Image (cartoon, rainbow over all chains, first blue to last red; front, side, top):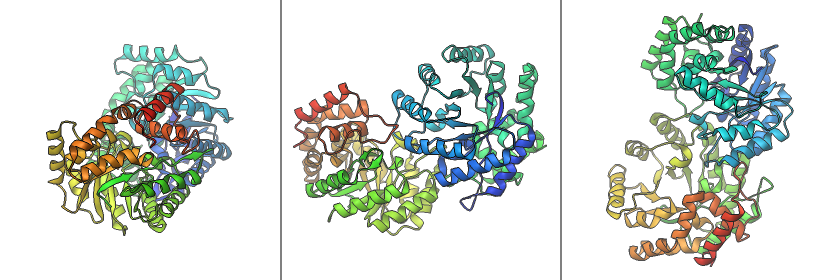
Length: 297
Length: 297
């Protein structure tokens, strides 16, 4: 479950309510596509904006429509006791694993972050993915902190931020992390534009934003990398550069939501306010890139 | 209500539940002290960590125990619809005004932030304080954004981050903001160590962390500034420098919680996990500063 491609679907809203029909279609489509796992309620799944009841509904819907594809459920929240409640809910929903980012409002110390993972893993019966996403959590993991947390029970994988684009530096980065954590803990790359380099550098998995909406191009990269054909994976990633450029300019969530809206996979607007959708010019550029790269195939 | 000293009490927890008895004592003490307003559920009041039901209880308790002192209630949340619900709850609780920080998980654009204030003020019947707290929200307000938001109905005050420590630069900063906003919108300083300088520079109010737990020394500064005796206000602030140094090192929330715990105003630990209290060394230093500066008087 912690190797290959994990697809992060959007959690579409409609009139500020969870659009369960659209979500069921997104998840069923992912299950049919052959992704290795589905991560519900990642950052792309707007977990941080949804309340406990909504998140329980989303988790149950994901498990129901994923069929035999394992479902990982995001359980991040600002307060430890809520994270623990969300972990219970995810397990009751039938999640195969949970994903935990250390959300912050007051800046967290390393001991706060370690304590969060310690408190949560103490009561957990399924594996946990450590979610390092400094752009949203404003927590910076040191390698020492990775090492401390990776020793905790149930920790199965670490989702790391983009690695350096230069191949030797990327390999060194992955090797440095791996030398600090137990063998049974995997490393997954995030930052879609960095995925092919990360997989070539030895990451076990790709935690992918775009795969949650457009699984085909992500599977092309993931499968090539899995067979050791990193040249093909890098070539496909290079072909998608106009998409990665849009991610860099507008953020992967807003671009992916605009793609899903453009393809009418979800209704418009689908993001929770205060997040506004992109303007007409940006949407036109995105539609052009979707067409030119034949992403909707 | 938007001039003078606004005191931000802690929201103490006990076994991860709102400690209403301790809170009632804190708020009653503030009301007796003569502060000009009480802001419940500010950052110091851990608003970001509490759910809607808890926040409603806190708001009602604050209004109940504040007597004739006006109560401002923090309504920040990641999702606009929750902010709107919290605004309704605050009004039902009898709040005199609300305080709104643009919490973020996904980075917000200026249009997102403006849209949040536009959506929330559209349905509001009481004044609103704009809460600019970049250290926790990761939103940077430009002066243009202040100007756009200050034009919205119900906006009554802007709580700004620390001004430059040099008096002329501080005056210039306050004047720059004032030149961009309507006359009826006040400016309040935050960052307690910066308060005396901010008041001397022309701020109308001080939104104070320490006043929520130790109103006396904050009132000494605020009252001196109010009578135009800025030399006395600056001298009192300089006397408190060891306290400001602790704030800078450990963060004002953790230090203030440690003070309240040391003085047995609240039980230990009082902060919501994952926030850990300070270690024994830091607590010993804090207790020494409280004694040496005679802060508990």
